[in-house]
Length: 199
Length: 334
Image (tube, rainbow over all chains, first blue to last red; front, side, top):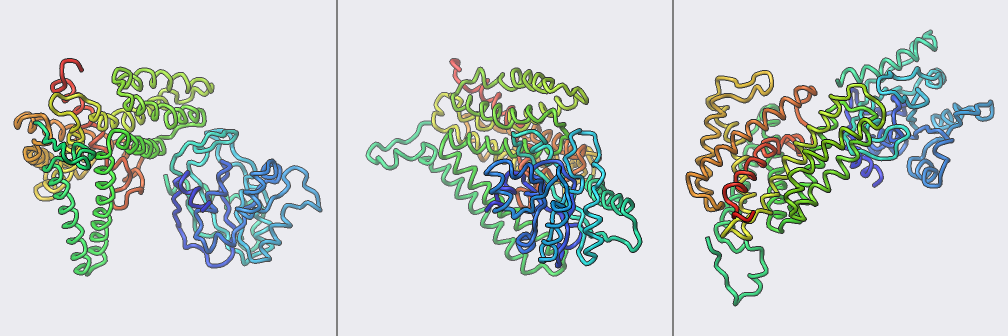
C-alpha cells in the first residue's frame, strides 16, 4: 500500500543494470531528498523489500511522532546517531547486527544531502568500507536517484509531482588489499557513472 | 439541425442531449467495432508470430489497442457526462503532461515554488475559469498573469543563474500542457446557434480528425514515404505521409460533417487546417524530446509512451479549432 503510494507520488521507475540480487546486499545511493530511501525501498521487488532495512538519521526521524512511526514501523529503518558518535553509539554496530541477521541495507554514504544545484556528490564516509571489509560476502549495489531533489528538495515541504527514476547498477566489490580511500572513490564513481549512463 | 423531442418519455429526456442523437450512437458503435476488429487482429497475429521480433511487434500492437480501449472509453464517457467531467479529465491530462515535460526540463532548486504554483494553483484555476464560463479571463489568465507571476516568483529566491532559460522552460510547459490543451474542452462552453447541447460532438470531431490524421500520416509514410521533412527532429515524418495523411483525414472528415455546425466545404477546410496544426504539434513536441535526449515522454500509457506523446497534435489543433468555431460560428452576442 505505502509502496504504491510512494510510486504514485514520485512516478518512480526502477531500472536494473544488473540482475536484482538473490543474496543479502547493501544498496548505496546518492542523497538528495528525504524521499530517497522510501523511493528505493518502494522500487525493490517485494521479496527483497521485506528484508531490506534503510539506514536513517535518528535526529531527523525521531523528531516527530509521524516520522518515528514511518521510520520504525513502516520502513523498518535502522536509526543511527550522526552527531554524538561514541563507542557505545557506534553507528556501524546496528548495521552489522542487521547484516548478521540476514537483512539487506540501504545506505547513503554521503551522509548529508547536497544543497547546491551544481555541487557534485559529497565524498563518501568510511562506513561503507568497514561494512564491505567485515562482510566480504555481501553484494554491494550502487544506486542512482534522479529528480528526487526536484520533487522534495532539502528544507522544502511542498511536493512537486515530477517523475523520479531509480537506477540500480552492477555490483562492486572490495578488492584484496584495496585501501579505504581508493575503495570509497571507486564506490562514489560507480554511483556517478549511473548518472552519466542515463544522461 | 433540430432535435427530436419526445416529451412522453421522461427517462429519455434525462439522457444527455447528445445521446438522443442516433447518428452519434452509430458513431460510438462504429468506434467500438473498429477497436474490436483491432483486438481481434491482435489476437490472431499473436498466434501466428514466430520470431521474437514479430512477437514484440504484435505485443506492442496489442498494448496499443488495449490502451486505445481505455483512452476512448474515458474520453467518450466524460464527454457525454458533460462539462464538469470533461474538464476534470483534461485537467488531469494537463497535470500528467506538465509532469512529463517539467521532468525533462532541467529546472533548479530556486524554481521549486514556481513549479508548485503552476501545478497546484494556476492549472486548477485555469480550468475553473472554464467551468465558470468566464471566457475573458480564461483567455488571458495564463498568457498574461501566469507569465508575470512565473517571472516574479522565480526571482524571489535570489538565484539568477540560467534565469531566462528556467523561466522560458516553465512557461513553455504551462502554455502547451495547460493553456493550449484546455481549448479542447473549452469547445463545450461555446454558444452556437441551433447547436445547443451538442457541443460535445465538436470535441469528438476534433479528436477523431486529429488522431486519425496521425494514424493516416503514419500509414501513408510507411507505404510511400521517401522524402524526409525534418530528419534530425522526427525521422519518421515524410512529405508523402504528411500530404497523403492530411488530405485523407480531411476527406474522412466529410463523413463526419453531421457532427458539426459547418457545411461540407467548411468541414473539409477546417479539418485540413487541423491536420496541419496537429502535424506542427507533433514536430514541436519531438523537438523538445530530442533536446532532452529521450524517445518518449514517459511510459504511462502502454504501447504509446507518455500522455504528451498521445496529445501532442491535439495541443496545437485545439486552440485553432476553438477560435475558428468561436469567431465564425457563434452568435453575435458571444
